[in-house]
Length: 268
Image (tube, rainbow, N blue to C red; front, side, top):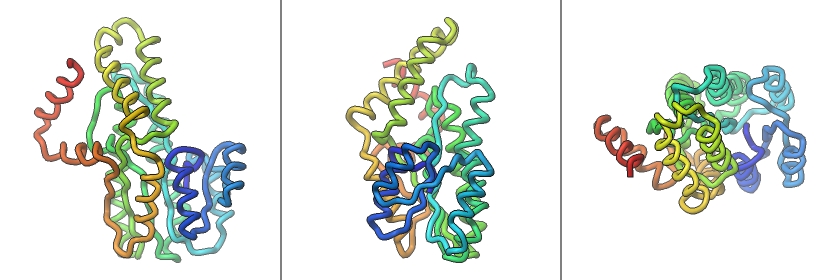
């Protein structure tokens, strides 16, 4: 699995270990590798944007068949799309979308041999486009589409592809998102605050609420990932959390109605 240093990834690595899997867990820092090693998980240094590290991870796995690949690596880039540097948007896609596909391509022969499963970790951000989170939203919508295509292409080859769609989760990532919102409000030019200040404040309030109160524990998501890897007939998608269900239902509401609801939340 990728992105195992903290949050959902770390919790999943330990849960899959407890289920009896041999877990090869990707991290970018040696201290994170040590922590996983101490818990009986095999760490590997893996940045999904570095081809050489992906190749080394594939070589580390060797000729064994593979039961599952969990694509969890990712980060969030936020801000009003009018002001987001294009190079940051490119990096968002490189990690959250392109990197996932690069890892899939590298391990697909082992997955075929093991009739294994690919589990992509999406988000409610891939179901509902909320203001001030545009780069992250765009990457998760792209991951949704890529997952659908992979599922349909690989099903005849015996490889299932599953999407996990968590809502708010209490992880270090959500704290970083809040810091990002604060930075935009503090350091942005006057016209940014004038045009988007209310939206940024609402987004910060929402993420703070997730971090302190409403977010589910990362272990809840880990258990769903375990189910996706072990169920005899896994679902194509698993929603995690009440806000994830609400985001999915928004797809059946007219766009203009959703627009008005979101704007009313910002004004209130």
